[in-house]
Image (cartoon, rainbow, N blue to C red; front, side, top):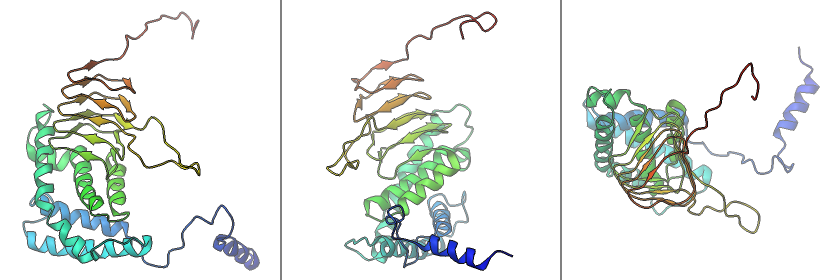
Length: 286
């Protein structure tokens, strides 16, 4: 049996909150948003947006469940994070529900974009239930509307759940237009201040990231626009990295494995430098 005094000493140390290393960790006094509750919320959202694919056709029942779960999760988030918004949780929830038809319209354009861009896709239904891009976009488009409604933390949890499931990391604050597609998807990163137009296609491993940060007088990074602007009708192929507040002009193609940190005009074709071929004998020169 463990020594009681040792256990008490460990408990006391774990409960300590005055050291500089622990001081910034909040001490929850209220219920936190529940990750399993948010999973359930997304289940209900998907059943509403794509009835028959995710759950039955009883939209009214799913909406009622969605309303109850979402309003509770928003209340938890507001209490813990001490955020003040103009409307109570129930009104924010209703405002979100009124956005569902537009979310469904946007997701329907994403379904078509993914289907049209992949000859391996045999049916629109296959795209909805099988493709990781659609799962990531369902979570993102829902989270983005909640972000616009200034709901704390829930949008981040939603997109991180999709990130964990698909390997596609989209910040909920990013702005993404219609007919957006991601082929395969693993390793895609879309940063917080990205602006992405319509009919944009990304392949696996693409990073739309920040090149550097602007710091305040305390040495902390400032939340200013720092991610790329991708205009309409752009294709970015696999493992390319686009960094900084630059613009990729409309109707451009960025080839695979490109490192791009400067803006390019419309109708550009950017490819990597030619690879160098070398031969080695018995390991010599490696």
